[in-house]
Image 1 (tube, helix red, strand yellow):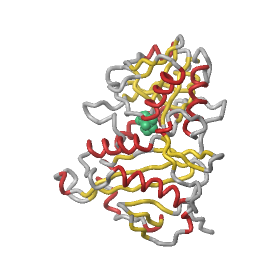
Image 2 (spheres, rainbow, N blue to C red):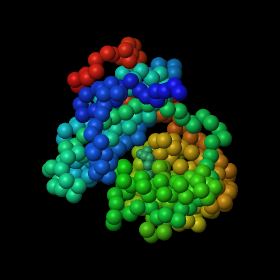
Image 3 (tube, protein in one colour):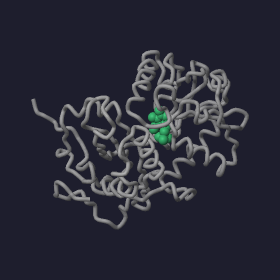
Image 4 (spheres, rainbow, N blue to C red):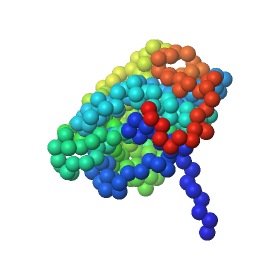
Length: 330
Ligand code: PMP
């Protein structure tokens, strides 16, 4: 039997250094409590073909949320300044030399010390990966059938929903598995108050009578960067009113249209919820317009909000993918 090596990028970044993928190893036992407290980000970079440049969408906002997540987990944020992480991310994408869309994941984790030991005993580590990815933006017929989960979205009394902690995703997995087994494409979760929270890995918007509404930031949702972008696009580009407020389950059923949003989810139309077909179809007119605008914005084809796009610096620069050093000091 021939062994086929798994495809992986050439480089990743770990604790201030660009490393060959194969050299990024850790001790097996670090996998234990380190993952319970780990926090991460999911970030996308989009290729602008005409410019030959990849733009990372809202990189600063993602790094700010990573810092908040680390702070909440009492990690050492000062060892990983935002400027260093911004440069590291761009350098990594350039080094991996992908002429296409990329998915970037920084992950911070603590090692050492006892399981419930003093905070100061632990060392904060951080790695960043970047991989080629694909986008569903531009696929007209992409939509999801959602079902409300019997699992309740984690709440601030027990877990921190507003930050991106790995442990939170056990809740998301339970809801996703249940939805798939029940024949849905994905789940919607209610919070402890019985109001709509979000999907397993995305926020949710509804449209009714020409207005948009979405669960507010105290509804047990992640402080989503795409949600914030959608609100700004709707208000400032489309001139549509957006309400951020508690949302009832039955409001979801009676909505004209609905969509998920998130870095991975982008803007994804929802066609039905608990088998109630949404009245305006999927995508409804507001969702379609927002999706098109979002697509133009992330690629830098639409020039609104230039501060949201960080060029990785591919234009005019030789790709560093032929780099041979195994450990490049930052
Ligand atoms: N909620 C959850 C639980 C998520 O995992 C995500 C994806 N990060 C989102 C919402 C959307 O957040 P963002 O727009 O920042 O990607």
